Image (spheres, rainbow, N blue to C red):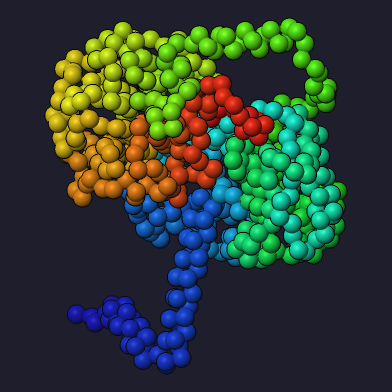
Length: 547
């Protein structure tokens, strides 16, 4: 029998490698450890960056999973595709360079990023995103409109006022004012706006320079249209702001970008577009690009003639206003309840979107339908419009299978659109074991596809499917959901996949990535969801309803 030396060598090679590694010099060992530590640190920095800008979820007590290496590489590949880099899934030099480049501090719109990728290669089998429209939108245009704007929260008026209330120490005030005047004018040429500097009093767009995260990182950020901080802009005072210069950070170029956010645009991946999140440096004479112009005109339409100065009230107008006041005074008791709430009264008992995509709101013994523009149908008694329900309900929600569940006391009623299903009502304890009676709110939470029940200051997570039980460790304190009030009256997953909570006179939009209420909330439910007439300031009246 012949002895096979090749087999011996093959078996011995791994052992030899281990011996050599074991006997490597201390310097070589330290070098290997440093290299390994460097890779780990690089991935940790990349993970922090991706969390900061919306590519990875931040810590969430209800849906927290540490990103594995596989998940991180998948997200890096998605980042590379969106910004036109070679798709390696690795932290190569071009990827790290882009991540470390100065950029806008506003998060990227991942809902549309995913839709663009889905449009190119089909749906991601691991995605739970049910958005019906974003994939179609991604196929036909590259600019991105903010989700809240798509739901109707945009500027209603076309004459907007702004002011710089906190100036930079790097540039004199007159120059700063001139820069913003020029930047606003570029957007005025593209859209139907007249934007003017207002020296005092309330303004729609408040601009401040304040310390941020340090030079060369997030240069500035801005809020989309809305009351309160809606439309406001913040610039990092730590930056080296310059004018008509390629050195430092050119204020005009950054301001031009941030103004796009105040009108409702998100980040675009079109190279050279003003709404691309990455700072491109100073380019003399650069203004809005075709992608930017198409974006603002998709929201507001093209530029029109400057409106004439307001005329003095005519007799006909005064009569029309008086007729309107009389009509509002004769509204049903339900509308008076919704539009004229006391400080601690709740506006509604529940809101839901049924399988046929119709939106219903419930208040006392009545319900009414909400249209896309927030107009309301005439109120109808619940017991007549939803045959089988009692006169009033505690709360309502529609689950992912399309069934709508109404809760009253210790009973639950299941409907398919407005048709009650056989076998109902039944005790809550049978349909949802472990869930208490007399609930305040119920909602389906898209990020983890769980059902949540709220009663008082506690909430319960329900495990559906074959388990059908309240999850271990529940109930928990509602304070886990940061910035929500201690009592919730209603909740709904809206068309954009986001969760909205209602409490008293206000509503709260929840940011899943931050696991906290969105900045700029709460807002008044009556005027924003139900178009109630109210005494508002000029600034508050400048935006439309979110629905």
